[in-house]
Image 1 (tube, rainbow, N blue to C red):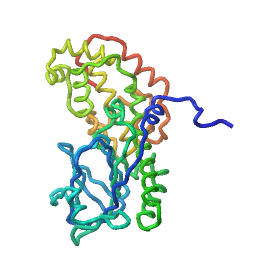
Image 2: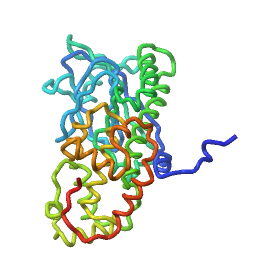
Image 3: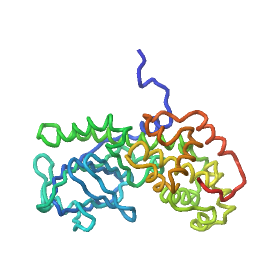
Image 4: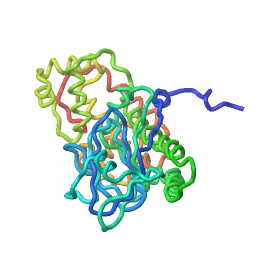
Length: 340
């Protein structure tokens, strides 16, 4: 008999294993419209699972995210954010809201108006150590999981049913069950995004640290839809095009535009595995603009079409696709080629 923990390791497995999660569920919320609360930023990943109803999540300058029943949102960097029934509803700090409406014996928060009700399971992921920087860098500020996605519905539906069943009862040990189920959600979400990052060639370690290169890389990851050129990126970090291209390659092994292409592919793969979005929508969210551009880049680099990738359960892309990524990281003259 072969033990699973004796199986060969890989980059995704090692990153997930390095994440020692001890989930701490804040509370169950039963909220009547209008309602709204703000969660302060902290170095703790946070999540919100909609058990019933719908709501809006807003974080900084990011586009608001609409969440429906069964949808999960994770904020891996723990940014300050608000949750509300509508975008213009008044918002109260969560600590103040709980002070005004103390949780009951089952850690449930009940408040709001007389309008339609929304039930949430809200919590945070307490880690034994801070989330590894390389992992955080690869994740979007808001990571969502949609039960309508065919690739995750097989496991998320029964888990979600169990969460709702626990939330509807007052059985002893519910907090512990919620914490363990939250671990499942986090691990599955991270695996989906890290698998895409690995297939796009983003999990290789950097050879050296360079603050300006790291700033340029962060700009690319946080603004993949921006029509970047080498000149525009160099201007943002106060460097010449030639110097940025040289130092970027020294630190990462590739050109800035090649890195942009990998980030876009990685994020597209993440959306394909976790969200029931059209290819046109994913193309817009990742900077490709059109379904045709996304499909062409995805097939060229990963050896599989976006539709076929969505139907898989996260297996590695074909060897040919991965080899193409490696070959294109060999030194080439700096240029301003499009990432598409």
